[in-house]
Image (cartoon, rainbow over all chains, first blue to last red; front, side, top):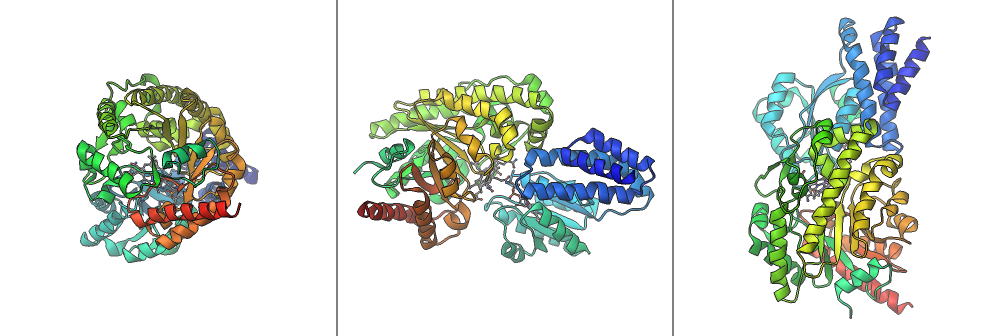
Length: 212
Length: 351
Ligand code: B12
């Protein structure tokens, strides 16, 4: 019975079916399944599979977005129960595309996969000046700050943002990860970031390894 | 010897010119930096714009610039006609911000924009007319005009996430918006062509198309692309889509364009095998890793590999896959031209 509910939740997320995802979360709660089990085996597992299908070229951007939407619908219902059961999020992330850069597809996918992996994510959007990163870091006290850039001309804004976080005295209390098509591991080192990942799945592993 | 543009057109007709043409997409992210002026000045001062673009012809006489003499404000012309915000930062193409991310709003209110009145379009049209006149006096002229495609324009109206989500969840809503945007794009291209004495082609740029599944593409996107390309039958029709989309390649040629400029991450031999009998290919040396960051030797080598894979039999325009990226040095463009010249000579000798 429990197995079946979790399987249906998993399938609903893969199909991007928010209504069924909500119903199955409710059914799982009613059946007395631990919130943490619902989260891990139903939702995080499904988003992991979604990420895999995307990397393999089986899923496309719309499929990934609606899967995440279904996951979020279920999570909204589950969250109060997670809090009650004192299940802590894996970590807190703020993420944004740096100043001057409007590319957000990759950044959005990273944010979704992070959420799907159990992080709490605050997405600051695109064209984000360093002051806004600082402000958000003060408000949200994240473990991780994610910076995205798709243009060689906006990569320097990543360095500027890291310098600004440093000047604001916040650099040591958080980890900074960077990504986007022109960004490389070497560049990440050079600008003093804590890590680089080439895609959304690896961004999740990187984030987990940095805070473990 | 034929001119570069004649060779380009031979390749468009899937013929094999005596020398493989080199065609390069240039626009404001690259050109102002190449010429050493602020991007805003490039947009604002017609004489500088003209000098820089003419300078390209003199510096690289063997290349074809696509579209060549492009009057643009980054990507702002089309979205501005629908009322989006524009932000001009120092030395950057304008940033564009949606006024609402609610697609239902757009589906309800959107009306075709009139190119002679809306946003930046009338300014572009006036300048096309004036510049074509000046170039004609010197025996030159503007041959091609451009527009962003329906998905790219729609993504500026609402932001990309609502568009992609509604494509899957609310296809009728998205269709309504894409229809109006497509009508505007056709009117916009026609209005631009009307400004020219001797128009020969159009280029449509839409990378967002590459991010959807073959099913969504066929049902919801292709009808609009096809309507645009069908409207310009008889002209050279270039389609630029820089998103790697191997699963779409078998379907894309149905949209009815003549030249495909695609991502360097797709193997040109495979793309040729799939659509080369219908469409000329423009590519596909890596624009960033090699165009910007590579040595001329590395560019030459990659270009030669590309020629080996796809030039024989015709229908190839050697290029960077995508556009000429900001920061591409002139020497790396020279390397493409040399590679095309050498390959063609050897190929002729071996026949
Ligand atoms: C789609 C696209 C656009 C769309 C963007 C739509 C949107 N809302 O995002 C549109 C058409 C609007 C656009 C605009 C422009 N673009 Co553009 N665009 C692209 C394109 C084709 C694909 C990018 C993309 O979305 N890929 C899909 C996603 C899933 O991949 P991704 O972004 O790389 O993200 C993955 C990883 O990088 C990583 N990742 C991403 N972010 C992060 C963050 C962290 C923290 C981590 C860990 C990982 C990570 O994980 C992601 C998921 O796997 C690229 C070419 C390319 N193939 O990369 C050009 C490209 C990036 N664009 C380019 C240019 C020049 C522009 C313009 C300046 C053009 C113009 N004429 O104005 C404008 C820029 C406007 C601005 N100020 O930003 C150039 C940049 C060249 C350069 N030298 O820097 C490119 C490379 C094209 C080219 N060949 O020249 N573009």
